[in-house]
Image (cartoon, rainbow, N blue to C red; front, top):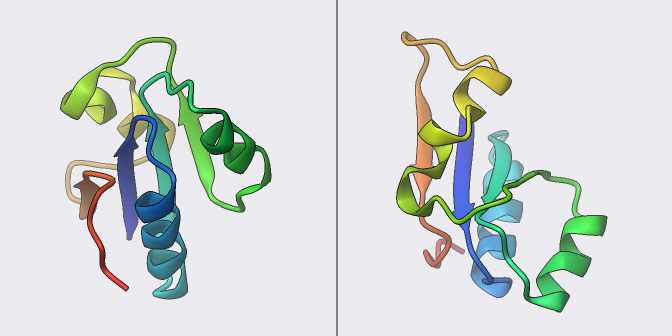
Length: 90
């Protein structure tokens, strides 16, 4: 299963969520809506999770508009998750 976390300038909850999901054998892709928060950008340089940095803020439809489903080979019959970055699931 693959999970796309749509993010903009949030660090703590999305990073915790990504780590938790990865521990459940979920492939995590953070779709970043052109964030400019320096600690977050530093995190992106070191995270083991995949990050798609966008040139514009596409909001909650970013995964569909940026071509992430095609890039990661998600087919119409495949299950996937798209989530906001502010869920506390630990």
